[in-house]
Image (cartoon, rainbow, N blue to C red):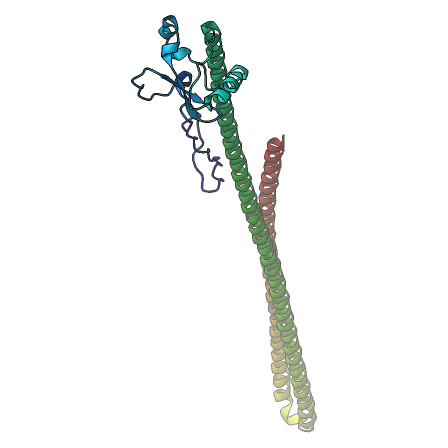
Length: 335
């Protein structure tokens, strides 16, 4: 609290210091003489000294010429130093006579009741003047106090505005960071999806090349076997032609050879058939395994994408609720 008794807000480093107007130093008021009587030592001849306001010189009054009853009045009943109409007229009467060969003249006697009335009026004026000065001082202090409170209010409003602006900047920076983080995650998700798609495409390409390579090798093998079989058959025919010449001698051998060849052929065909069936079965099993693995990868990928989408929708919902809350708070503050 200050000297006026009113509460003062604590000083803030962001606030403007209150303006305290400097009061002018009190002027030294001259002490007027009481009832126009100076407090000097009275002369031995008991003469009353009255200060002439026009000449600022004492007027000598011989009390011997004044009747005894006039000397009984108190010194407070002497005329005031405030120049009024009557004192001016008395000065006019005294001044021309005061210059005559240094001889002082007697001052005309004034009615004491009128002096008392003048003194009361003077005291009343002095009281009114003091009351006016006190009211002006109180009004000035009130205005200074109101100005100080107004400056403190403006400083508080400025501080509150700066705080709100700082919070808004921090909120905008936070939203910008969240947006940047969200965009970064979306970009990483897109890159991850592109990478998965490229890996899937590369895997399919490798599987296709591997399958084509196996098919080509299988065809080459079958072609070689066919060529080898044809060659053998040709050799067998040549051998049969050669053996035909020795038919008689080698009929038994030829029959045995034919039976052996037939068995070998049957065995070879059986093996070829079993090999083909085995290859077909392996190919089907591999294809089924690849299909299951592909379906499993697709299922896992769909689950991951669904979870990421759900997480993203949850974050967007939270951000939307946060924005709606902030807008509601701003509307409430504006209202």
